[in-house]
View 1 (cartoon, one colour):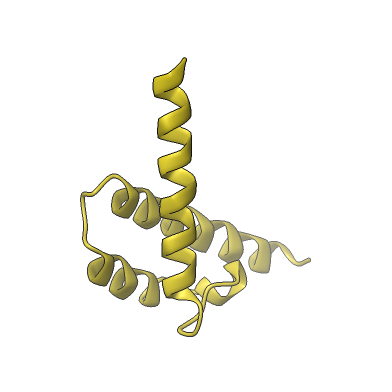
View 2 (spheres, helix red, strand yellow):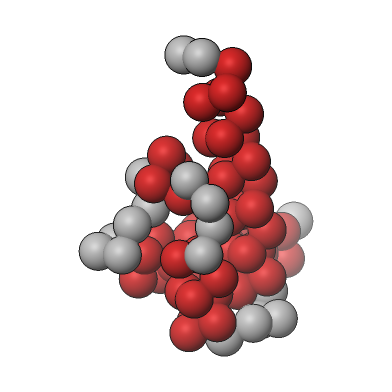
Length: 74
């Protein structure tokens, strides 16, 4: 993979991770997260597109909640 493509992928992944975390923590709504994700440059490199963004957010929220529940059980 070229360095430019790797940089684009890393940048998109970092920005999308921040948006998803904000959503999971309740800092932004589902609709705002969806809008922000659709505006991330090169988001398609992360496997997120207009057809699966809802599923990605739902799945990440579920994973986040499970991790939080596990932390509270310790």
